Image (cartoon, rainbow, N blue to C red; front, side):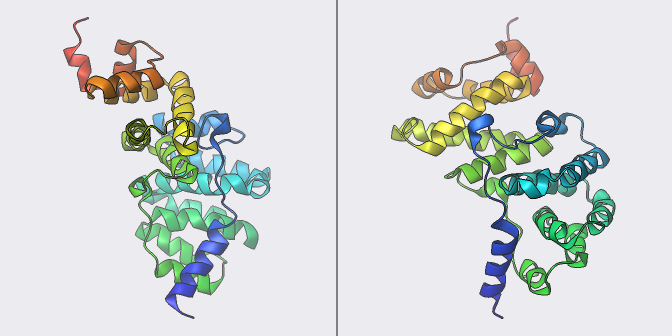
Length: 254
């Protein structure tokens, strides 16, 4: 079997069941325990993350909601990328589940891309051709995508919820700025969804609001005015910048 066919098999079996969750409920991962998933980055703990994943598997949310699987796999993979020492424990936990669940969970180990996670991927009870295809394919850089689809944007949210990496928010803000330049903020589905999603998450989380306000504060003239109209500050400038750890705090006159 050729490398191309290996790659197609990997994508069809590990990704086809992982369609994107739309932004209708505020963007990113939506599931039982959503708040815990969204706030994980504020108090990271790989053991707690594993318990959350096991809960989703055991209450059948994982298997009943294939639209969540990709986002959850991205979220989990980023945790393992940051805490590779937890991989063996996660791997042994997944091995105790049935073959179907191992196939569904395998994607998170592939996405993590660490030596430990790639070793675990090879140990799971999944098709040998899929294992070989994974070895022949590069681990994707989730923040290197261009933000052209809602799938990309959900990936940004999954990365952010797991790590708190502000680059994920910056990628979404770049999508909106491009929409402003091209006049497609409302007509382009992806851009409109990004605005809606950021607004809702800014209201929910002052850290996110702070990242957005910090970004807008670096813009000039018309760009800043347009972004302020689309993404108004939800928590007061001082509180938002403090929450995000912004260096601009030092320059505030109050």
